[in-house]
Image 1: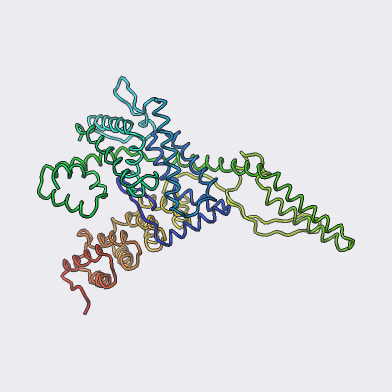
Image 2: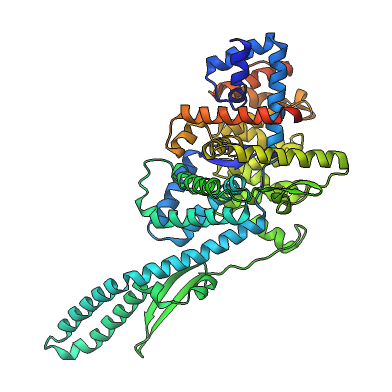
Length: 210
Length: 319
């Protein structure tokens, strides 16, 4: 499966048709035999989604960039051992999700500075300075949407790394729970429980805003 | 199913992760229970709220990641080359020793020119094997061509070798979509062999699908692209023009020929949507729908065809 961005921020999973699957296999085989152009094409097929996943999970462009580099370097170094036992997508995402989980776990241990800061003007999400500010003519609505954004950020930071990961893969990357389980080396049922806990926590914390 | 279990399953229901039977039970309960319908609306609002928090990596960040990766890969290759150098040198030395042994053979008169050719061959082979080691300056590697391919080699009579190389170099262009060069490159990128590049390009073309050259490129992608994602994206860019005859012809063709049921489903939705002026009285469309009913196995497409034919007051079959 390849995930592509859909309308309105939601991602949709698109199955590769047989022709595209064989194109991808041909690319992988060419890259395995040292064809640099084929490897670059393979990277471009997936790298935007990989970067989006890392950026949304880690909420820090530098960390997202680290994960991007390390993931594709590992793919390059280990591509010769890829035996088509699973899809390339699953193999790649296993690498990416492990790297992201490592970052998230280290962050929990280090108790890093949260992305949401307290300022005299109210709470501020540091990612606001990275993202383009949306123009909103109504100051009241602007304030509300900023508060909401901060609240969602706080809740996401309170989820466990695994809950975060499953939620991100299901909600934004549009992956099915079965594929998520396969990627994370767990069962579909365990992934379902993680998703359930994550949505329950979010519902409880956002109740006042909805 | 009672209210408790419906509420518990609402998130999975919205994600489409319930079994057929569970989903059916939720639907039945929702039809009868207003409180659960409200809970579902709240759950949808939660989804919409979270959707708005998604961060989209900027093109600059993506470009920087790709550039850094290219440098790191070059470093990796150079390091791998250095690690392999002793082994390769040893094998080349063995090869050289073997050749020397051959040329130490008493027939010296013909051995001289042959020896020259053989040494050229050794030079060429060793250059190929040790290429990463021969460019130790990593920074330089990063600015070298993205890909190079040797097309032709020929030894000349001064003992040197002439090599013809095809090289692809990279440069960054930025400009408005109105710029003629940018447009030309975008239209070329829409037909590039790289799937990922085509997906991104078609997304850009969609922003200006009112313009004839971009719309033609979208129509071409929808008809001919091998990648489902590209075709889906092109289809979304053409939604606004589903009432126009040329787009309708393509949609009808997609309905008959596209291998992806999701794309066929969207095509029939567009063809039969009420705002597609003329849908109700399009005899050509009736014929297409009848053809599809004969050929398609896809339940959703068949259902939509039947409904559309009913609305058009046309028969299900041609007589």
